[in-house]
Image (cartoon, rainbow, N blue to C red; front, top):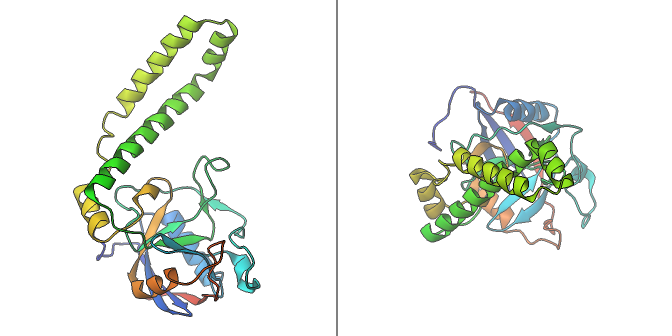
Length: 257
């Protein structure tokens, strides 16, 4: 991915914050997220919201509509518009490099389809990683994916598994487990490489949050104002990661092409 170029369907948005301006680019190839973000900007949903969750060397998060009028010290992050957005994972085209824009979401236990929050989003700041750390994360990602595939196959064969258990057919269960394991290996045979050479270089030289790749929809990036994002991430925060002094999006507007 060329982080300096724009493509057809991309949209630029100006976020005027109390610490300075941030210009973001919404990707045209994640149209559900782009169109929703544009709609919310035009409706004024982001005007006045706080950066309610800020973690240095990780990310800054905003978009909770309830934060607009929240008193100091109140725990935030539970507010949202009354809908979610279907995930648009385009990994490795879009990934969690420094400056990436991604949608927040509820956890897997209540949101197994990894649907995005309708309004909350975050900007990645992250940190730099060594080659060894990326190798280790790659191995862990491969193992997680294998487990996800195996669990999905087991779910598809749930009736057969339950019948075998009722019949106390240990040999049958073992045979089915071996069959599903072999099918998992076949389906994940090309999973040994997760990070492209470009991604590895970016994560090593610029930084990011690679452990979030493939789990949250990346739908844009910062094209100017990362110095402002850095000011936000360095803010003093309380025990809930909310800045002690409010940092607010004053206004959001669509920029002309």
